[in-house]
Length: 217
Image (tube, rainbow, N blue to C red; front, side, top):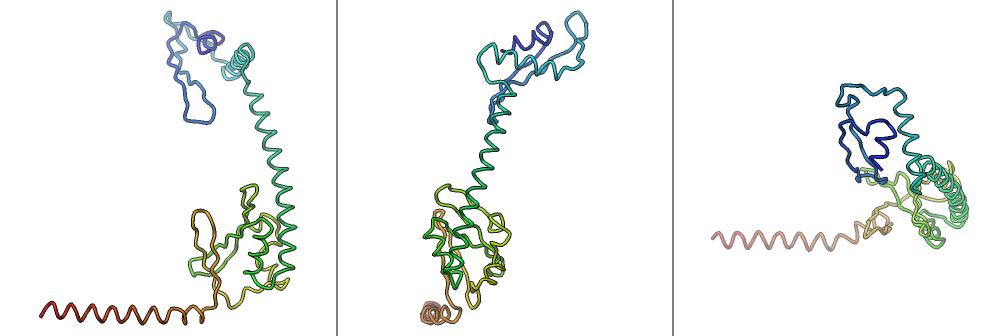
């Protein structure tokens, strides 16, 4: 193919280097050619890009290969289909979201209701440990979106206005093998649960210090 391409461009007798580039999705050939031939004659490189495009298309057609134009058309069709599928998917998620909001009094209940409908809610936590938003993961398609990407009224503000409570709750998320585990507890309850562990840790430290002093004596 490379020799045919060079011949179509009038470079078959010129110095050149050609190498295959396979580090991209589409394997292709790079050609570096000297436009001055061995007799010192310079190739007319007017419209060289257009000529190269026509040559590549001709070679593709002669050898039953896809032309660049056909590849572009396929990509465009694929993008159009993806866009339509995403539009349908977002509309479906929006229906599930609206229904889950009606069924929920708290964000925790909302997460469970969405989970039951085939969507996983992945909270976004800021540096202060506060919930600042969330993403919606569709289990069937494997796609996920920001809540605002589904609809402008899918965010926390709209949910609060519709009666979903975020107050008095702390939200932490733990990602384990791609799954989001929700831990929703009241701060006072967390502190009370940790008190025994804190006392045990304090006793262990005191015992350790006593042993260190004994060893040094």
